[in-house]
Length: 319
Ligand SMILES: [Zn+2]
Image (tube, rainbow, N blue to C red; front, side, top):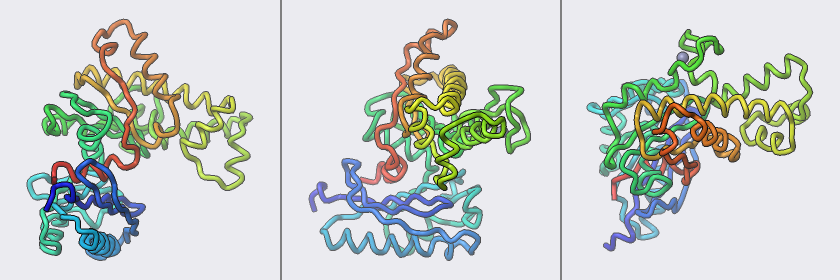
């Protein structure tokens, strides 16, 4: 069997649903399926639709003559590395402490590996995307919550996990909004997608005029994309939100760089996919920050793999 026909199955489990994909050894997604995750059920019932999607994708791989090397699963939360199982998944609590790798290996007779989603995304970017060949690579994601991960010499930096796992509660403003952890001014309350939405809600409560009102009245859901579109049209509230988030992101980025001393920093996640506004803010902050010469030397780049990053990285290095 030629290695050109080697693939692995990536499985991205989230509270909203599961993506199952056939990924080739160049990091390309060859085939993809979506499945529901049945929250609130026992563990196997929760992932039952995902298992059927894996069955289907394995049949497809077989029919196409692919050699499947293994399964890579990524989850939103923390994992027990030694026991190869989820530890704490806030959106899929029934899978906490469920022996996921053992279960899947017994079912599919293939090697299975488990990763945290942000770690998987970083490995994907390191192997196939914006971090290729970079020795010390930091990845920061802005989704509903803020996540970060570090790779050194091609390996996830486990000693940094302690920090990195709690990065969303890094304190950047003592008088900022109150966080779910009880403290004020955690980074999560200032730069995540949730934080952006709350800023818009506060502006609406203050009665500020914004073209967002009409779009939200049209039953469009709030998203960074919607905010970026209105900012692009010059809407003052949207520009104000991007300005504020950009400033805090700049502050946070300098803190991360001081802490982890990366050679390159990749910014990814839903908030970043929406446009260059935030990236420009961060670059400006780093360039104009006089106290840190380290910061001006760090490359700050957007993620290349977009929403595929986690699923592609979840199968590295199964080939
Ligand atoms: Zn917090």
